[in-house]
Image 1 (cartoon, helix red, strand yellow):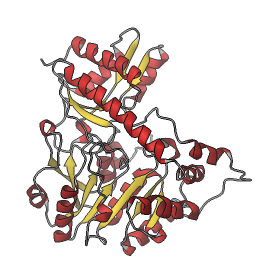
Image 2: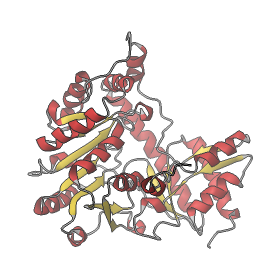
Image 3: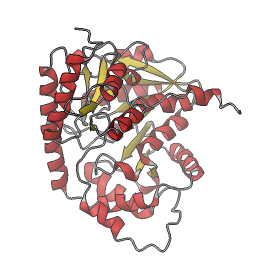
Length: 400
């Protein structure tokens, strides 16, 4: 039998999705599984997005321009970005296959094989995957759960930089821990990028979900860094359109956008029906965002208070996105997550969480951490956390 490549063998599995077969097996047995493991909210997508697809009169679904439908690109530039104070032109935006392709493109454009990219740890686990695919080394800067995973002293960025460093990669607000970068944080990181002429790749897909009085500050608005910033965005979270797989990559740097177009042409075009859904979503009323944000705050407040009431559990209060990292009194959260799906039942129900070790680069870090998503309405979350609390009581690998 032919052997697969060493690279394919070493490709890291998704921490978020690798336990799905266990969840599927539990469901096949008639078990109710509460999904706190994935960033897939149960919130309704905007009617205008769904209607845009329903009303299509296409005779066939043909390719679009590799950069995306012009109507979508112009709409994003004029209806969305200029409305939130990000001043870009249409040639500075290319539609991608979700934010994931945008991050991967940005890393490919910024780095050669063997180069280094600075990240704050913990970070979105798929950054590990994209770095592996491109032969890039992630250079982690640790943050502290007991300090709410806040951005650490800027001197740590200076110390992490070597002659191999080509970029800083941030997610603001952050997945997996809900960290919100202040304007001061962003300006300080921008100064480091300017001083060392590094790319600043800013993943801002959770921009609408910030829970402080201070507004979100985009990397695109850092003064005198126009040629270094690569913005990655998506409609998945903003409009609850995760499955349409539409995002974008944005930069004022013409060389970056010329290179991005080459990658875009290589995959022909973004999903066509998803692009039409995204066009429709641009007409979403502001009331929708206000209601969704208020709902996430309700969910967050319930989850954080409930988790911290469970003996041995600690989690900080996130200020953005819809995730938290929780420290659990277990030997290994992956073992615990597997046990919850395979063995634990409460009234024939169980809860699925995401082990957080793969959100870290440093070996041994995060073994007792889990990413938990507040993506279910509160009545469902009550039952999900009932399962989690009882599971922690019964788990044979409990540590205290």
